[in-house]
Image (cartoon, rainbow, N blue to C red; front, side, top):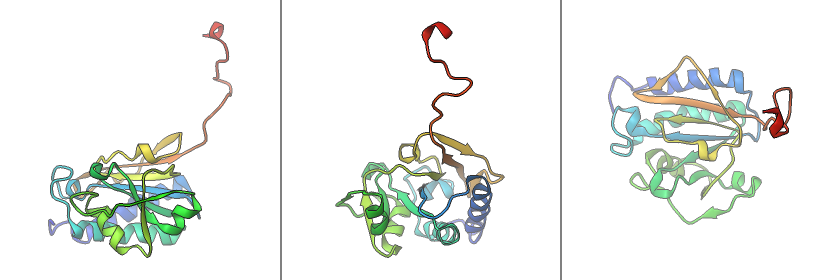
Length: 187
C-alpha cells in the first residue's frame, strides 16, 4: 500500500459517510451495501492488486459508521462470486435471506469481502439483497443490490485513495403525482 494513504483512507471515508448520513438519515435495521475495490483504492486496475491493508483501514471507518448509525452492513464480493454478499447471519435471518456455500478469498470474492468474512462475528454469504443505501468505492457496481429507486448523494469526498466514490440512498417509487401521465392521449 502507498504509505501516503496510511491513516488517510479511514479519515476520508469517515468524512464521506458523515456527509452522506446528514442527507440519507439511515437508522437501525437499514441495510447498507458496500462495494469496494481495494486495487482501485491504490491506483491499480480493479481485481489486480487487492490488499488486506486497505481493507483493514476501510473496515475501521465502516464498522464505526455501523456502530454510530446502527445500520446493517453487507459487503459485495467480486464478479468471481457473482457479486454475492457477506453479512452477519442474524441480518440474513432478519431479512429472510438464504445463505449459500461460499467463502470469499482475495482471488474469488475480493480482498474486502475476504477480510470482512474473517472479521465479522458470524458471517454468511447470500446471493442478493435489496439495500436501503450503499457506497461504491472503485466502480464495483452495487446498483443490483439497491432497492428501487436509487438516488445519488453527492459529498465533498469524490475519491477514496485513487478510487472513484459513489453513494446512494433509495426512496419508494413515486406512483402518480402532478407529472404523472395516465393515458396515451395525454402524451
